[in-house]
Image (cartoon, rainbow, N blue to C red; front, side, top):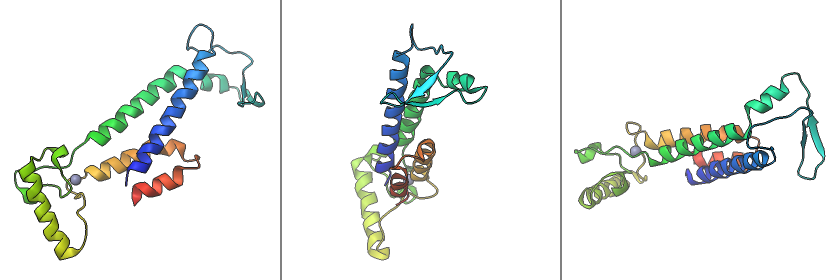
Length: 167
Ligand SMILES: [Zn+2]
């Protein structure tokens, strides 16, 4: 079930974007960082950290709001492309991925024939059809989602969303 992790990743990307937009709006003259004695403060204004190592300023500048916004946009495209990928369709219905649908390009007749095959399999094995390894669409989507979620592993919802993706 990838839906939970899709929602998790989209929510984290939305948070990154909002944070970058707020940061950019506080920089005079646009979105490039200019700082000298920079402090990072919490939402209540309490200081969280000051420069703690020599290259911290360069590090912060490297991750300025513009860059974060570009990264969020790129990750959203990557997510959308993964979700838009399709299951394998073959002229031979026995080689078509069992979970393919009209969304993947089957016409109504082909989809009905595939469903009949799936029903035969259910009767024989008792299991629901799954995306075949030879198709790989679902495995690729799960992997892309997990990689996109990885930077948010400290988020309290991460473990649950990851578990749902692997269910
Ligand atoms: Zn498939």
